[in-house]
Each structure stands twice: as C-alpha cells, then as structure tokens.
Length: 536
Image (tube, rainbow, N blue to C red):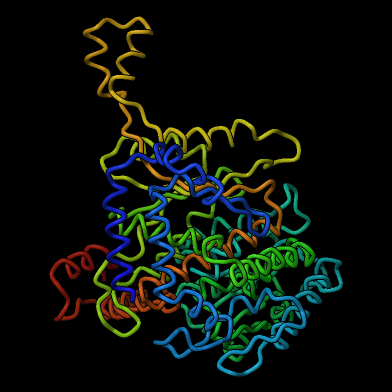
C-alpha cells in the first residue's frame, strides 16, 4: 500500500539526513553503477543525490506501490488520465513514427497526427524555397510567433537551442501583453516579408489576441487588404475562430494536447519554417526514443522514474522545497523557464485526483540560469545558505563547432563536487594559515570560508546539443513530471490555478471602463486601481 511505502521512504530519509553523500560511495561500492544510466543519447548521474542504498530502494518501492507502471500504461493507451477535464493526454503520439496506432479515449489519432505533420512539412518547404510568398509576391524572411505560456515557451526553447548563427529565416517571439514586447520584436522588420503565426489553443487567450490585433494593424498599414490573410497563420484547436480573425491558413491540434506539452505539434510550426523539417523530425525522433526508454526500461534503470524519485526524496523525505536547474550551455538558456511551467503548472497543486487534500508537499519551486552565469548570482545561496537546494546540472560536452567548451563543463563538474564535498571550518583555517594569514586572521575568516557541503545534485550529460538530444531531454522531464504526479496522486494535466486571475482581470478592466472600482473590491486593490487607472 502507498501509505506503508511512504512511511518507509520517510524513515529512510531520516536516516540519510544524518549521513554525508560522499561517505555513501565507500559504504556502497556499487553506488555509481546503480545510480548512473544512459537513455536516448543522454547520460544521467544520480549518485550525488542524498539517498543511501536503503533510501534508493525505498523510493523504488514507493513507485511500485503507487502503480507507476500501470499509470504509465494508461497514459500511452489514451485513457482519460486528465480526470478533471475527461481527456486523454497523448503528447507521445505527436512524436511517434509514421504507422503508430495511438488512440484517445478509444478513437484512433495517429493518422490525423501524420496528416498534420505532412501539412506542416509541405507548407514549410514551400515557404523556405520561395513558392509560398506574401501579399506583394516577396519571399518571407521573418516569422513573428505570437503565443503565451505553452504556446510560447516550448517553441522559444527549440529556436534558442537549435537556431543557426545566421538563419535564412529569422524567428521572433511575442508573448507579453506589454506593448514593449511587440515593439521590440518589430524593430527592423519589413511587413512585406513578415509572416505572423498566432498560436492559441482556444483562440480566446486575451494576451495572444491583443498582440495579434497589434500585428494585424502593423501589417495592414503597409499591405493591400486583399493579401493580408497570406501573412497570418493560425495554430489552434478552434480553426473557425482563427479563420474569422483573418488567418489565411490554420493548423490544428486536439484537446488531448496540453499547452505545456504541445511543442511537438503544429504549435512549433514557426520552428519548422525557420529550422527546416529535417531538424524538427530529428527533434521528434529524439523524444520518441525517450518514450521507448520510459515504456520499456525497468524502474531501477528508468531515467524519468529515477529523476522523479530523486525529487520526491528531496521534497517529501528531506523537506527541500526548491530545485535549481543549471544548463551549462548558452543555447539552453530558456530551459529553466520552460521547466518552471512544465513542472510547476503540472504539479503545483494541493488536491489529489479524488478531490482530497494532498497532505504532503508536491512540486518544489523551480528556478535557474545558464551556467556559468548562475555561479555569479544565486550559487552563493546554494553553497552557503541555510536551505538545501538540489541542483540539476545539464552538461553539454561540445557547445560550439569552433571553440572548446572544456572550461564550461569543468565548471559544472566542479560546482557539483563543491556542493557535495563542502569545506570544514578546520580545512578553511588550515588553508588560511598556509596562505600566510595570522592565527587571529584565520580564526576570524575561517567561518566565512566554510561550506557545509552534503548538497545533492544530478548531472544530465550529452555530447552535443543536437535536435535528437534536445527532444530526448524535454521528453525526459515531461515523463519525470508525470511520474511525480502519479506518486503524489495529483492530476498533472489540468491548470485551474491560472483561471482565477484571468477572471478577476476582466472584472478589473470593467471597473476601469466604468471609471470607478466595484463596491465589493477589497480596499488595497481599489486603491491601486485608483492610482493606476487613467484619469477621466
């Protein structure tokens, strides 16, 4: 039963809290081989995590008690794992090879997926070779991608990670409703050579439609009205609304594709256009390889499962409420932001699938910056702060064709080692004396140069940031997030928490239009509204 397994995991964690990570290597000679693995071109090392062998086994027992394997089968079978919305969750179907046979709630979907992919490929190739042109007959040189949340973060991550240094077709993104975002994106663009791709699942998202209207006005000021539709593409599950807006073409995706899991679909059409279909297909292939690993590998050698169990051990066993993600590759600079949405929107919940309270901690706060930038920002807290914050180090051996990344990945390894080993006050004192400090000065400074150590980390290593490697990496974290949701007993595929603020924002806009706050508005919000609303 899960209750017994949870109790045993918590007991193991209490024991491990008294031990140091580096001592576990001597106590358990097989630790490194048991806690490292290769999956879909990625190498994972979880040996610097806080669990002992007993803790590791307790975590695996918890996964089995929570029926991770059964829930995994339900996901891939297209059952209604999104219980609150009665939907299947089938992002793996989007990257499966042609000839797959995925079903959503019993209805076949793979043929439709293949048809949309073929449509994307045909359109992108026509645009890239100049057969698809704008209103004045000129070739498109820039794609302006408008979306927000999952309609922005995934494609933006793909583009940053895989873009050539001098692209044939540039790609720019607008997400924020702040007009500054649009103004910056439009700098230097020519309306005659700009294609606008509007991505919205419902085609009702306020921020996206506001920005789409701004882009339409910008284009309409320079282009003939009869050709304007050629500059607008809609990617949506509501194609009739996109067409009514003025999109000349639409590309569909279904409601069994959650926004933060949608980058494998037509949501990434902009990237297909800018990168070429071959690159995007390789990206899909990498993710499909991770899907196969997740489905077939035993739990004790299953990369997404072990990543999830390390997180749960830290959060619920050792009460660590945050995790940092440090990608040591400039091209992965958007990965922390992407994972914030993927994990915190999926699992940032306190209610279980059956409606009861979770009764324990769920998703930690996820934050990060690319290395080595983060070393000069928040790593001070990671090393010497009172809270223990586990770190995921994403390490790329070769980040650029023309330059060595040795200094970069060496820093990643050194940071992980320093977090684990630390430095005692006696060691700091001895180093100060050896450097010529007086006894009094060494006594004064040694506490400041002490590092507690015993701070866990995971390393995810790849040779190069290829499209396949990126696809595998993202799929790895998707499945990790799912496994965590299974073990915490929550639904990882709804996001009711984003709704209330949207509803209240609409009410506040009505107050602004009326010129007075509503009678039931709280005093603080009413006062701020009065300060910010335009004077009449």
